[in-house]
Image 1 (cartoon, rainbow, N blue to C red):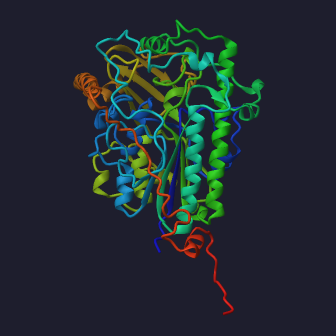
Image 2: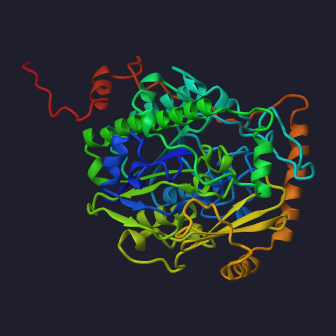
Image 3: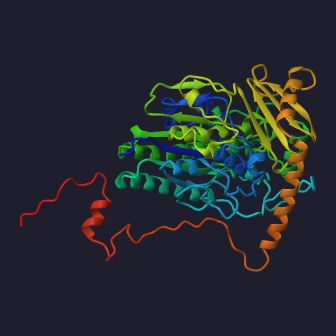
Length: 506
């Protein structure tokens, strides 16, 4: 029997890394994740590779920066020829399963996963392409706006709740199937869409949150060019929000965290009930964060901490002693980490990536690259490629379209004082970016990609439209009793644990 560990990846959407109880947030109610954190390696300085859904998730899957895989925005295709950790683990003999959101764009909706249990919540076509040639344009039918804050509050059902309810149900059912079918080892990614806006949540989860403990916005009002563009992108001038609406949005967001914690707790309970907990590594993270009003901004698309920093827990049942790691790490590191956990760190599919395995940190060691990570942004609100470098406590943000921003988070954790013009360390990090990135060529590549995809989208909408959106197939021909089956076999094989014997007297 294969003794390699199962791997369960729990992913959320827009869960800010500083909005967790294990990082000291006073209003978060997540008892199941808190218990997991107490048994895990907690990464306190984990960052996404791009603060936008599709680019971040593509980097999470591939270990490559957006400039390397080409997913610049939420309507860019991840080429089927780019290896993902699902390919790596599948080649190593793992059963690879995706349940929930991954925001793949293009006809390949599996990218190495053998099974996909749900559809996605967002479209897989080229409809959401930004246009850098029209920097003042707001594409109203799909850009963020402030309705999510203005309308924040109670909702018993939404499209997001329907999606996550189904995601949790399918995940629980598949974990039971792994146990009763003996399908170890598996790697299953369970990916929820909450706490992504709109900020609407069921009453019972919002009632768990004490309004008096919810912090207000922090960090002052950011007035750099990119932050001003993000306010335009989100239509903040035309759709102003009041303090009461913003408090309601934060409460609904925290309620969504409580909802997710309950779903995750039920999933983790299945591992225990089916005897899989002692051989399953659990990884918890998010694709990016949410500004939640900090710096006068909402949603993501920014390199401020609320948007770019993510939670990251890794629980290995063979290493029961918890550890806190403050080294800067990236979602780029997940792909090689999972390859290492699966016993294939030298797979040819891992060659040439930007990430580095976190296994040394999980064992109390250090990374070869030290304490430095990079991130990029080329989505809506930008007008040229943007790059962030985080080196220790230093964060430097560069774009050829804007003045740089530079913060020392040890001295200025709220990122209130830009020291780019006065601190000589800024020039050192600017040189590092200049040596690593060819931003002029990248700018041309992004513009070509945007133009090509806009033209392709127009062409594909002529005549018969063929959707790339994933439609899951559920085979019910063997799940319940059908007359081509033996009832005794159906009932025996659907039961876990299996009955030991059957006695007959004649």
